[in-house]
Every structure is written in structure tokens, then in C-alpha cells.
Image (cartoon, rainbow, N blue to C red; front, side, top):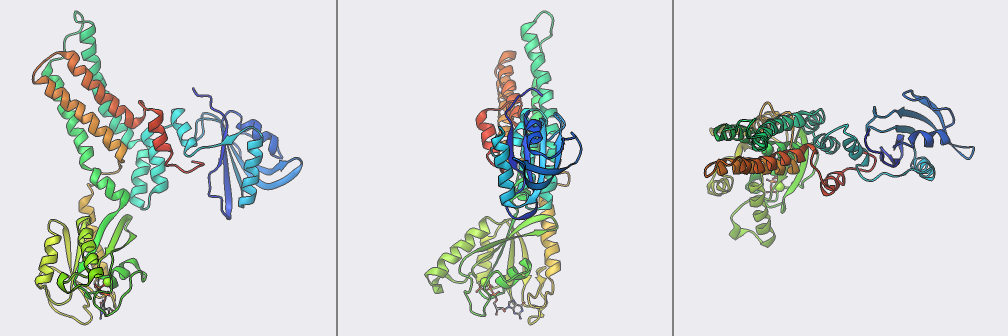
Length: 441
Ligand SMILES: Nc1nc2c(ncn2[C@@H]2O[C@H](COP(=O)(O)OP(=O)(O)OP(=O)(O)O)[C@@H](O)[C@H]2O)c(=O)[nH]1
Ligand SMILES: [Mg+2]
């Protein structure tokens, strides 16, 4: 272990009444501190049962798990204390540990230490926060594969090829007699290959955003067609007001569900009819509905019996969007519809499963089969910078074949990739990343 940080403490579980509370201590004084407050002699790498004691008074019956550096989450000596989950008990034990010389950990400081102690790279540290924040199985799975090094290995591969090329160019500049110059064609061809690889990752970023933030699916149609009823049926509870009065829904309502491991943000909208007959509130509602259509990935277009001129105008707003046509109130409107509409009834549940399958089918078409990882905005920005630098190399090759001119941009590209994995970092980058963590992680 290279770094010698002070000893930190925090709860790893929320301070709330619960079955168990976990307190973590990390740093080179972790063992000394636990030895002064635990009822028994600590056996490293064993499950230790006993009491936390302060001045001879028992504070709680606990289990202590001692990890020995470097085989711990942070790469340092780590003590985990499992207490009863009482906020009073947890706070008292933390106060006691602080009085023995530890200090409160900052947000994400345990994971930051894991990074600074080379236990994980920066993309893996970011995967930890992604797992904690993930709201769907799919985003948790992808974050887990990043934690296991999927993105890291992709980036390292890219970077190593560029480092090899950069080293050859530098060697040929420094030792022109001994090392042959790398010809421009080879340089351009390698840069082109790497740009393609980066593009492949960037092409998927839209899908990465979908997986992290969910797919927006909005329900549109004339007033009274049954949008809010379907919205409630899809959510499985009565979220939106339903009445037989046209124009019941005045504003857009957004709620999220988990469908087969993917997040879906359903948006119920105000029914759209001729603006001339709508009052001021309804007009604003209609504008909001149109806005919701713009930001949606899938549009559920609801109609009752047939599609008229108002519907046609509404459909124009959804041009270019994935659409599912839905004929509503099938229990009372058993008509044959030709345009591939799914017939549903929110009252009887008829057709709802088929509709969900259809939504899922479209979602799957947004996600490439081999996409077992995600990138975040910071990583995407680094990839774009790496790509721009490689494009500069290619542009430069059009008017010169001075190798040192290529070398500068190649180095920028390597550094940009290094920012993803954290070989290159600044305090600001680390602060930005770890301030998103919770205390105790
Ligand atoms: N029989 C039957 N009635 C339905 C069905 N779905 C909705 N309704 C009724 O149709 C009326 C309007 O339903 P809503 O869900 O409020 O319609 P909406 O499209 O949200 O209407 P606005 O908010 O005004 O745009 C209510 O009386 C519902 O009970 C259905 O599947 N079958
Ligand atoms: Mg409604």
C-alpha cells in the first residue's frame, strides 16, 4: 500500500431504526481503536462476537469483522462493526471511535481510498455509485460488469495500442539512427481503427442513458379516450384522476415502473382537442402534452372508434417516434381495427399484457445485444476528447509528415482515455465523482 492516510469512520447503513447497523473504520489505526473499545481480543480475518465497551459500560452487543490490508475494500486495515440498528447506539459508537482518534469519513471516501490505493480504477469506482443508484436490474447489471472491469479493459486496450504507436514515434524522433520512422499511412490507419472503436462505444451512449434514466413512454389521444385509465392500469395503482368528463387531466403526470428489468417513465398527458375550444388551463396542458411527445422515446397513441382529423394532427407531432396504436375500451367497442392497433380494456385488463410485450419489444430494439456495460457523461466526454485528438492526427497528416506533430495529439488522446480509468486525474475530477457518493461508501 503506497498511501498512508488517517483513519476514518462512518456508518455504511442509513441511521434509522433497523435490524442491523454497520459502522466501518478504515486506516492504519483501525485495529488500535477497535482494541480499546471491544470486550475481547480481536482475531483478524475472523468473525468476532462481543461488546463495545466505554469506560467499563457495555454499549451494544456486536459482531466485528476485521479485514487486513491490502485485502479489504479500501486496501487498508478495515474494521466493520455490526451493531443493532438503533440510531442512538450507532451514534454513540461513532462518537467513541472519533474520541479514539478517527475522523468522520467524507462522501465516498472509502471508495476514493480504494481507488487511490489501486484496488480499483476510476471507472470501477464510478460503477460502485452506479450500482447504489441503479433503479433497475439492467442498470445494476451493467454497473456490476463495469465494476468487474468491462469498461476498464475496453479503454486499456484502446490506450495500449496508442501508447505503443506513440512510443515508436518518440523513439524514432529521439534515436533517428537506430529506430525507423513510423510511416504516416500506418499512423493514419491505426488512428482510424481507434476512432471506429471509440465511435462504437459512443454509438451506444444513447442506450446507456436509457438504461440509467429509463425510457420515456407517453400516452396521447383525444380527451376521454382512456389515457389516465391505461396509465393507472400500467402502474398498477390509481395515480391519475379518472372521470367521464372530457379534459379531466390538465397536466402531464410522470411515473416510473420497472418492466422486465428496464425502467419505463410513463407520462400521462392532457387530452388534445381543438385549441379554440379549450380554456387557458387546457391550452397550457395541450402545450405540455406536445412537449412530452417531443421528449418521449415511445408514443402510445390511444383512440376509441376511429382516427379523425384531430388525431391526424396529433400524430403529426409524433412524427419520427416509435408509436403503438391502441384502441381503447374494448369491453364496449369490439370493433375490428385494421392499422395494427392493440385492443385493450383498462376495465377488464384485456390486451394489457400484449401491450407490455410490445413496449418491451421496442425497448429491446433500442439496446444492442452485446451491451453489457454503461458509460456516464464524464466518460463520454473523455471519449469524445480522445477521438477529436485522433482526428487531429489524421488532419495533420494531410499537410505534413512531421512525426512530432502527430505525437502531441496522440499524447492528448492517450491522456483523455487515461482520465476514464483514472491514471490521469485532478482533485477536481475526484471531488466531482466522489461528492456523488453517500457517506460510508
Ligand atoms: N368501459 C370502459 N370505460 C373506460 C375504459 N377506459 C376508460 N374508461 C372510462 O372512460 C372515461 C375517461 O377515462 P380517462 O382515463 O379519464 O380518459 P382520459 O383519456 O385520461 O381523459 P382526459 O384526461 O380527459 O384526456 C372514464 O369514465 C373511464 O372510466 C375502458 O377500458 N372501458
Ligand atoms: Mg386523463
